[in-house]
Length: 177
Image 1 (cartoon, rainbow, N blue to C red):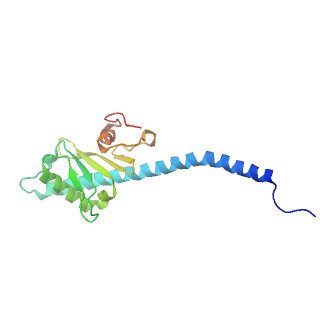
Image 2: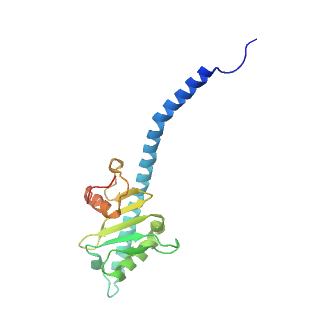
Image 3: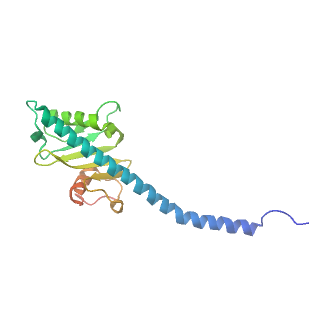
């Protein structure tokens, strides 16, 4: 009478094959995850750029005394999530705080996802028009208009390093690894 089941050798061979397959597939899967998260961050950066452009159009159309689109000339606004996700994030980086807060509040109307990101920033050109955006969330970066490339991914990237990348594809300084 034959016994049913597998021998110890057969089980060891199967486990070894599974181990080899796992060693080959896990790094590839991590690369796919990284690529999808960076693509998502690039999309968020594009949405912020659209929100900033819409906010600047609104601010220019309102024609309120004391604040004009030229107040944003050559400025960078950094956004950090607010403690309460139902309110606009805090903003820093501009010399004209009133103009910065108006931009933030207008952008919040167009893209309330600013609170879902760890950090984001918008840079304006000499005419006060948004030219670059950068975002970081859970260590994954995104930029616009130049899309952040997966090949350039590093840990601990800040929006200050990413804004030059968004404009011309170059980092302001070497990213830390």
